[in-house]
Length: 194
Image (cartoon, rainbow, N blue to C red; front, side):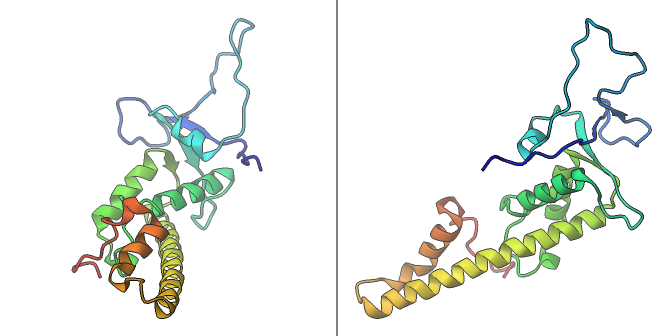
């Protein structure tokens, strides 16, 4: 099945010397008071995938508009939601070791928010983005816990019928199978996070 592309995104450009700018300093890419001439090449608007988000120039960002309730709207909002899911699953930014989103350190949340702001010009509040990110993180953590529970039941059933199965290493095997081998060290519970 081919990937679905998102249409008609608003891409804005920040001046290269500014870290953050207000909306008056941002210009829509492709907008100009000078009309196109025959000699100029005209870029055709195409659909955008999440992978295209990574190809944006470091000064380009996707502009996410909001409605009267402060919620993101349009195809940019769908792209943002997908990107929030990717960030929420990134164990380097947001580890699932924490018991709750509320126990996650603010520095981790702010680092994730800064990562999002590198690619998006947000009209929605930071709190709204953090809240949506927390929801995605909880969903991811819940899915991983469910998979771990199923694997544990599977291994315990095998161990009850086969005496050669070693239950001492069951946690490491579950983490490796559910999260992947590179996650074993990352997801070992820490005393201050559990």
